[in-house]
Image (cartoon, rainbow, N blue to C red):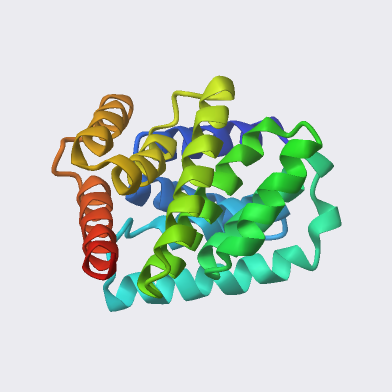
Length: 222
């Protein structure tokens, strides 16, 4: 891959780490237009497209997610075109956008056993997806079990990488579900500091809303 493309991919990722999703998408789109046959560029474009509207649940956001899924699914059929160290990332995003949390968790579990420490991220997100699933089915014990799995995965991830704001948002969800508002806000403060986003940022609001909603569900049935 040419240095120009590699450098631009790093710039796009930097924008993502600062929760500047629209700016990341615009740069990824331009890069894809220049290099439409480059699989890594296509992968980054798909992820930025899916993330473009953040936690927005509008019609546009759903359409973007669906488009991202289609692209990522095609890339899974060409997974060997990616370097071995990057294949898990492609699968992780596909499972995320296509709402397959159990597969996402299992992917992370498999990869971490192979010493891919970054895949604790897959475990953490996938486990949280299972919390949502079981909480909405009124299966409190299973929801708590998976919330603990998510929390444990994030704490392992932070030993390897602690400066990615988004990981702290997911950790906040697990902590909030298990221990309540104070622990959730403690993790969200770290996410705010790392992303330079205010407390009112949409992604943080969505995490609070989601945890509150799920805790109400399980409290109503416990």
